[in-house]
Image 1 (tube, rainbow, N blue to C red):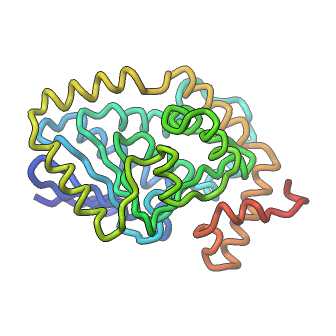
Image 2: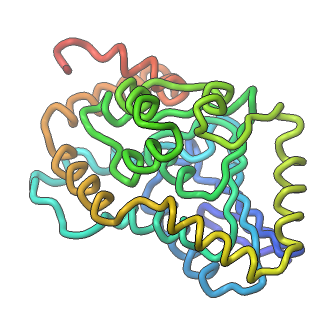
Length: 279
């Protein structure tokens, strides 16, 4: 059975496995369209007792899930009073982490910022050695990861490596991500889809009660505390309206337009080139 979301998601189901292809061109930004479609998908999966594994792939060769849509948000508001509770994006990612299904990211292309936090909310991540690129660029823009990154990354990488990744705002290849524990495995691109398909099919063939209970117990030991996620979300909101953030983001957007997308492809390098007047 195949169903389609005309906006950003294409779903294919077979033998208890749902394959979700993400298609939000040109760069799979985490924008309102994608967030709404993910919310709809999560609503459906939370009531789905037939699907046991969900695999996320990208329809775009250069991007898995990209950063937050900064162009749509910067200077949108000058109110520095953060909303109470979790941000909608953090709420969405927590819901993804708590789904009864096992969620797997098959990562090709760039996965950065809010897209990186989406990947962190998945149960497992497998990356293309040749084509996957990881990064948390927020600090380079004057922000901090605002949808769980400061909590998920230390749990996976350890404190020092999480600080390196977050504070450097640089790009990391799949081999480095594997060494750091950011992904389960980095595999040759030609082997990636086959490996993920076999693993998903194997897990989906097991009794659902065992899958669900095992995930629930691991979640109890590993999911970030909601109070810390709320604090992170509120700090992000306060920083988002600071003038220096707007200045840096505008410089990046202008450079990306002038170079026909080179900044998006090489964001880590671009963050290190922001002029002194914008720092």
